Length: 262
Image (cartoon, rainbow, N blue to C red; front, side, top):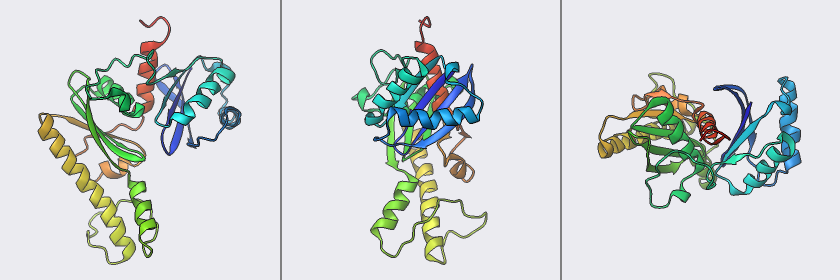
């Protein structure tokens, strides 16, 4: 079985993949002070609850946008799973993607992994919208090349900033307004929820339209990340939700680079 680890700014997702099926998936908050042993105590308990054994892991791959966690995650794979993990972004890992930006090393590992998965699973050209700590729009060419993208503040980040910067504004959760409910809020909370939700829908629709105009128009738009279904259901700008894109991209990259693959 393959152990995939996707370390984002907010959460880190561990998954076990057998063939092409994601058989287990666990999530933990990303913390740069967590030790190798702490990771193992946490994941070994979850594996035991699912009837899984660390001995079943035959390979591992890591993608991280937080440099500080790469070392403990790498040591976790070596010490407790008995394998040398592939780390997306290291020179020995071939993504099979032509990265057409000024400085390829600046591009987040998750964005490149999504580009790999998007093209392999859906073809191209594509716009991949990822609802994470930041909301990103990434362009994948017809031939699978990564062409760049757009980075915006994430929804929860925006809500937190609004709450912290304005003394009288409460902290609220992101949720889609009920069908037919007016955009105009009658309370502070309704006004905030409407502003965040419809503001992001408008941003998605506006950026997708501009990106399509810039790159030729006929592009499939995929959404991934935890909040993707919330927004995809209320706009025609998103064609499909691809919830496990990053994990599948890690599997594809591992298969490309595992011993004997080339």
